[in-house]
Image (cartoon, rainbow, N blue to C red; front, side):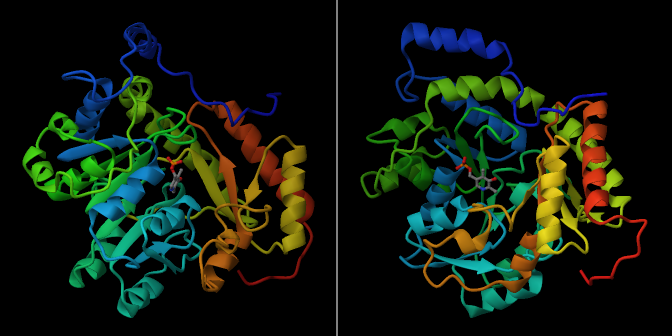
Length: 400
Ligand SMILES: *Cc1c(COP(=O)(O)O)cnc(C)c1O
């Protein structure tokens, strides 16, 4: 029998990173703007932009920093209303507040995606920008979102922190809206401990973000293609200093080549466990949208017919069997449960999102897991469900 798989450890960093890190340690050249050219951060930006087929990339200290700079780069008035899906990580409304904007949450339904009717209603209440967070890689209907927002001339930003490698109609998520932001924090597809990157095709936005990220004096001359735009913004923007340093880029760059494999393995793992869980009436895994090709490194599934107590007992039973399952709405102080965002003034009640969070489970499923480990995980979840709500016994039908 396989023992409980470790779903927390990251993959080792590719060994090529060592040589570059050693070179940087020898020379002490850690600041991105010291070298005249080809600093590791600059090379990462060029490579990342080429990988996604976008014009500009700006590497920064985190995805939260990228989201903040993206909002600032739009040059909106103080208090601008920014729509975002209410199922996301606390960092998203935090970035909106940090940028002096007003966070306007939109309902998310049992598909884990934005509720388009509520989205349209919130757009019509008045919105200055839309920040779509593809939470856990679940892509909301980008065709509908882009159509509704463009019709009102409202810019769409994408929080693709956890969506690197996800495609929408064959196009990379994060390149559909005006600006896309990705994370290199350890729990994402590329692991640098911390880090983020912003991508856009708009030179004016890129230039503003470059300067505000901390390209002071004429450091922006080391960002190809935006010099003219940066020259116009010289000394007119605050410097928030959210730069990436060279060691991070040295850790990230050799991982870029591993993205296709991680995506393929992650999808294989996800779809295998999803099919097994969907075989039980107790669980449902939201399907990908037809236009979406996912790049998952975790699996979210909904509990069918469990009371809150049943759900807690189920999580405990799974834990006893060696598999950690977190129920977003039932784990204490969960940073993805909107009612815990007490830093937002006048946070509205969102009944659909709340109902979803009370039955939505989160399971880590890293790309490196073996088939035997996947079976161990699926067996444990199915067994834990069966312990709480035995399927051989008739049970009262609870509408979901
Ligand atoms: C991780 C994550 C973030 C924040 O990324 P950081 O790089 O840690 O700032 C934002 N949004 C989503 C959906 C995330 O998963």
